[in-house]
Length: 166
Figure 1 (cartoon, helix red, strand yellow):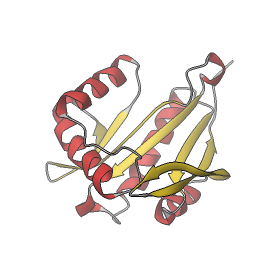
Figure 2 (cartoon, one colour; figure 1 turned 90 degrees about the vertical axis):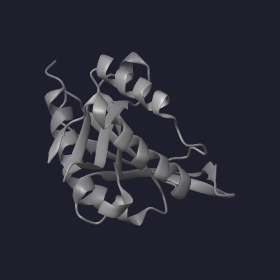
Figure 3 (cartoon, rainbow, N blue to C red; figure 1 turned 120 degrees about the vertical axis):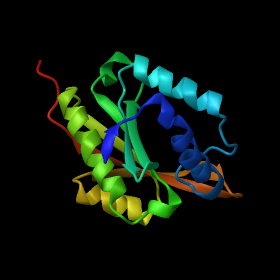
Figure 4 (cartoon, rainbow, N blue to C red; figure 1 turned 180 degrees about the vertical axis):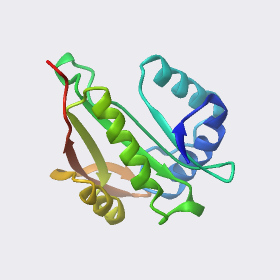
């Protein structure tokens, strides 16, 4: 079931996020976050009206997705960058795609024009998943990040949305 995240879901989302920090290049952080940090993140997203969707399976948070501003300047007001994370025991079940569809629908409701994906260039599964949803490749920044004692490239993809009623 996909639903909007509640504060009680933060611990489950934290487990997924910290596993990604420690084991993957999906996020270029080095240190796990604390529950207090993630609660502050959750509360800030609530105040900013930035959606967080969770995929719940048998009472467990199996994945979550969110988006926020691409850049802080007013000219980027209708462009968002998203994140999707799936629990390691629930990968390859289509959860990320289902969460992405919920995010895309919400972005259209909110009048967004462009959704940006910043994907580690070696993450072929995520790239394929985004392409199936209609995201188009925009370019790669070489050596954009450093993790696990190596330089990493970041590929950018975008999806054009309906945009605001101006």
